[in-house]
Image 1: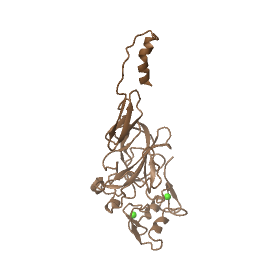
Image 2 (image 1 turned 30 degrees about the horizontal axis):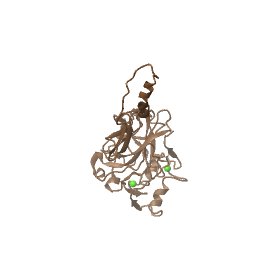
Image 3 (image 1 turned 60 degrees about the horizontal axis):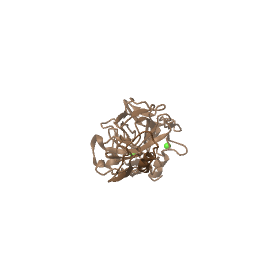
Image 4 (image 1 turned 90 degrees about the vertical axis):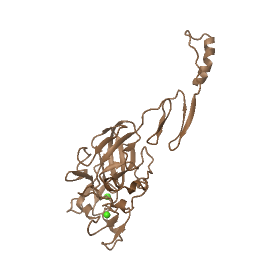
Length: 317
Ligand SMILES: [Ca+2]
Ligand SMILES: [Ca+2]
């Protein structure tokens, strides 16, 4: 359209259709395309506004008139999971990692956690899982950003890794987590497959420059009442939601205790089994119903410790 109008302009001037004299300009090279390995291909035309961007986290291609800013926000999140938490330093154990049980592909898509503004299917390289010490990987976690005006509206999700010291990192084991959303205020939710989810009480201003969100020390308020377990100065996600329904329940229908007994065989309470299972409340790679470091006691403790029919609900809107 633009090009045909320019070509037609000399004829319009010849007819004296305009009172002003404008020199016609020929625009050449009105489009093109390129391919960046690992990112994709992009085609562009002159005169088109910025339409969309593609990025691999390092390079970005914008389809349209100009190369805009990165359309992403980044966070340095810190949180603790009660299951592997101890009073030691670093605070969380990494039995899933040392046992070789952490899956290379994130488990959340298969478990039905929604993938919003991100396809899911992240993987972690063996070298990342070989790291030991405070930055050793404990497990996969699932994160959400929610709309600043509607704290039930999920606008982006991603799957990330949590280290023994609580740092939540991208799948390379070190980088801040990234959501491909524009700079704005968002609520943040941290979730784990057998812990109760948490959500920030307030929305947080996020940009391309990583923002720190520390959910382990009370500096960032959480939605609801007693959303996290508190031990001394440390706050952590409540463990024991084996059934992954945001309720910790010890007795009665659909409780979180029976699946542990069922998995170890159903009849001999002292039997154990190993692997990557939701019944492994302590995340040490062993499912255990009785004896020291078993996975059942935490459930009873977290519902109050005395009335078996009590329950604990996730504090989510
Ligand atoms: Ca449950
Ligand atoms: Ca265990």
